Image (cartoon, rainbow, N blue to C red):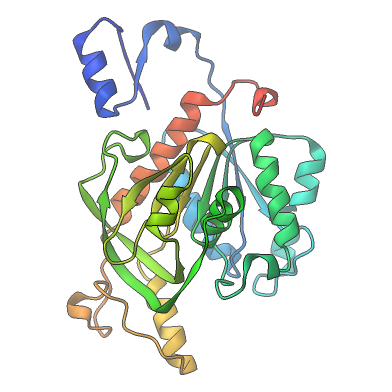
Length: 307
């Protein structure tokens, strides 16, 4: 939440330059408060696990959140009970036809990295979602494959197949300490990574209007801001539970799928030991900062979003 200070107080300028949320008294007096309307377009097979992970993060701030769960309109869900989908999820076509607008939208990853974007069965509708965000959403957060799909659609940045899976917990550098999205971040942080693809830094740098906020020498860019499209793209998994990488590793071992032990995850890289969560605090910081930026910028009247 922002701190209210007189604009003439020296601390006002100092804290503003440091990225601290500061609000001058006149703006604070005029500010109306309402719940933030956040959508989650859940493309993951394990819907309940994913919705719980993101709800935990966006529900941890003092702001009141109204969460709308969204699915692709025609895509069949096989890993979650039909009753759950019917009761809690709305197809995107219904949301779009209603004319309603959202303060924020999270678009999750999907286990379809090996496919070219255009071969994904719901790609056409997903591009409609991307276009819809530009007139109906104040800020969009694309996660893992969802972020890769967005940056490809809006900027043509390509997805590249890795020769081995990037799997484990990797250190990332804070490239923009003054960014409002990285308030409170350390100079580096650990983030879970689980993907067979990457977006290359030179190609992101060559695109117009993209800023890399978190980067890694080992696994490449992680968090990218796209101000013109009011979007963030993150290619890794701050939202993961402590045991999510373990679940993926155990699944592959049980299926006989070749997989390396996730790096820097188990103590001494020993899968017989309980894994350690070293990203939880930064996960809450990032999603809390995103929500606070929405809170600061979104119109009080939802109908004014995108105008």
